[in-house]
Image 1 (cartoon, helix red, strand yellow):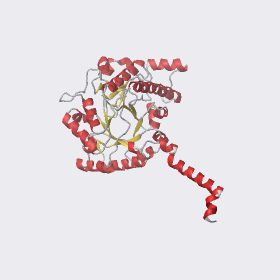
Image 2: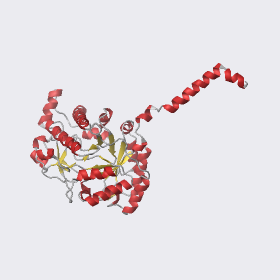
Image 3: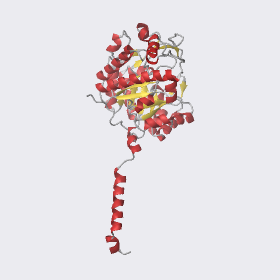
Image 4: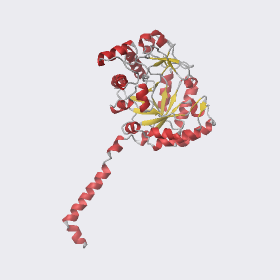
Amino acid sequence: MNANTWRWNPLWILLFGLTLIAAIALHSFTPVAAMMRPAAAQEIRGVWLTTNDTDVLVDRPKLHSAIDELAELNFNTLYPVVWNGGYAFFDSGTARQAGIQHFVRRGIQDYDILAELTTQAHANGMSVIPWFEFGFMAPATSELATMHPSWLTQKRDGSRIDMRRDGGDMVWLNPFKPEVQQFITHMLLELISRYDVDGVQFDDHFILPVDFGYDSYTRALYKEETGRDVPDPHNPNWVKWRADKLTAFVKTLNADLKARRRNIVFSVAPNPYDFAYKAQLQDWLTWVRQGWVDELIVQIYRNNLGAFRQHLYTPSMREAQRTIPTAAGILTGLRNSPIPISFIEAKVHSARSAGMGMVFFFYESLWEDAPEPPDTRQASFRNLFATPVQRAGYRAESL
């Protein structure tokens, strides 16, 4: 076929037009899965600052040095503890009204710790998401527990004590009682109103252990709504009823926080889903599906790399990852159980291969109380996070 025949053949003109339209369409439109997946540029690189890090938090030069150091190593998110042991780590009028007088809220140079940390972190381009660590849990001897015994729930045998592995006696606030919900809500609203933070985070203590919920209030409520007496702790209907009650509170709490500051990040750092739901009544996958969670960090503190990788690819993790920024919680060591940097590196690479970010527990164990010298550990993080990544779009805005 000669050139003139090709130029004027209507069939070729039609085929050329269809090809051009297809090329434009392929170039212009992004697959649905890609549109739903968080951009790689939003990789979470965070660290929890715990009560073990108090010596850093309460000394301004140490605090500034720590934040500058983390920024230089290209971390982009800080999760400072603000609620632990039944006490607030910020100046909370709500806590004072509840009779809680003990606070760790000011540094030794007489500065507001959370305000100082937030200002310094933002100056270094990092987000600050205060960590509401203890959730509904409190020490049995805390002011909160001793002054408000009616706020507590109990086991089937009437005991209120939850024996922890560290030997501490803990009790649990009843998350279904209106006065408990009001206390938690008011404290959080106060926090996001007074401080220029980017979000709030709830973890694996924003739950109720499956053995609890046998107090008179909850028994009567269950009887009223179902017509049945409370059964065995692991009864599926009883588990779902309590999980649904906690979910209803999360819905209301999320709405209250967003009404105060519409772009506040509602962060959740639970255990893997199967355990969280069955043992802790925390149906976080439903929270994600309903759009009440803005970021998810699942605590995968496994000492076996294969088990760690397996949890990265569970259906619940993959589903969450398609809609919100998702990360793996990685243990960097405890004072009596240091973790080699090579194992941490392997977990970071695994999380990144799964398309997830990473948050480390906790600051002091990043390069202190570790098997390797601090400069060796820091060099490793410098290689892991060689390119800066800012969490664009995560700065909260007031209405």
